[in-house]
Length: 599
Image (cartoon, rainbow, N blue to C red; front, side, top):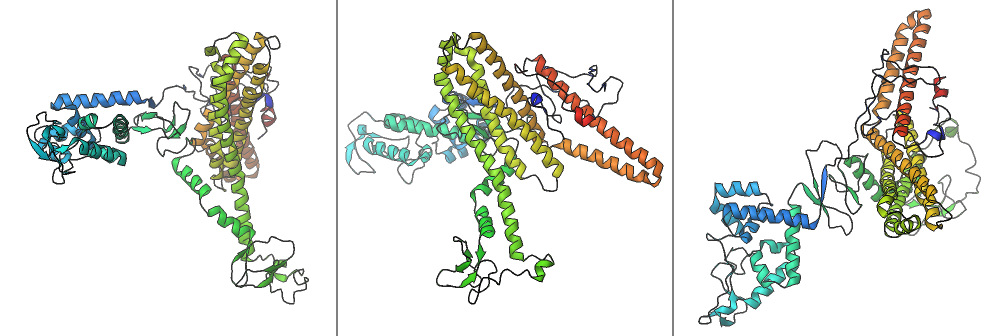
């Protein structure tokens, strides 16, 4: 495969399904290539033409703020309270017991109300927090055993009265202990009456009351299978995911700009699956690589078998006490009587190509470490670049947009293209990061797939670098320059260039992700076609004259189909780039990068 010309680097790869809004490719397209190969309506191009699909912005999830959650929670409580004709505090306790499922609660309640009341701790008559007002009767507090007037006591609806001071301490201590305060019961060990939110609202101070409400809100989210908290550091948003939305993607981008996978709650990791990500993360955190390093760069002591690393220049090794064995690093033989010339002889076993098992394992371990290091370093480097891009984006939103708005007399809303570019950089860095983990797990036997993967990955990285360079370096020239040095026309030209690079890079990465998620099926289909062509040629080789003809015909046909497919993909991308205004200013298409292959 010949490398693409630099002028075409921003275009989509030929094996990807091109995807743009409201753009379709029909059979009426008859573009002529420079080679004179036509694509017309009569040609049988069922395996060449590309079905183009719409790229919609519809999402499978909704970002919820705290106010949204509180509103939903209050609506559920009101619904249960109205239908069952019970106080709101009782409705809240029932929903807590039934994981905030209104339908499950209604079903259980109308099936056996008494059973539901017993399980939750509601009395036969809905509990009412009582604060007696008369001072006539004297009672003993069951906690502090003080004799006090009944007007200084409280109860959660049962017949057990405790002083308000003890009640307050009991409620506050339970809230400080954690979410268990949501299922609090009467302090009397023999009583199962529930202590609800009405009691907390009356007795708890503002700080503890707020903490109780937070536990209540968390229980609402954590009990709902369709809602999860964003795992981003310091983020208070939650996400509602539509399981019925048929996208095949679980990646979520929160309003805090943190991306995560809804399924496994790890960082967003398209195009990798959750199982592969788990393997990669485990590999990065376990002792497996340490074991490989020890195997590759150490040798066992011939006596005690302890692993030894050579940290000095000479070959005379001395094992640590209590072993103390002295040996030669090269041959692992005893150093006593070793004059340094015993290791220089080439043995017959070496002459016959025999390699000791330990040496073979060390070489394999070295290669495994080198291969892993190659992918891990690039994975980590892109993650570092992604985090730095987030910091740069934050600075642009808080500082640079205001500067540009003043310099060029444009409202910040018209400078959104800069933010869009940086958001795209952050997303592409994340995708590119996980492509290195993807490449690590490509089986060694699938060499064609690996080569093609490295090609499209390289194209993606080159395109992203151009976008990153434009958004970072070129933008600085407009931020630090005075208005007379950089005219408004020049800035508008920069706007067109950056927006174009953003659009093209987004399209390429969307198709890259789609292709990798499909397992690079295009490579498999091409390989199958070549295998079938080879089999047909072999079967016809019994007749020599016809064999040459058949084999040449098959190869020519496959090459023609492949070339036509590539040219169509490239032409579609170029047409869309021109139609959508995504061609970068100053770039030109000087030649067809596929001409050499076609010839």
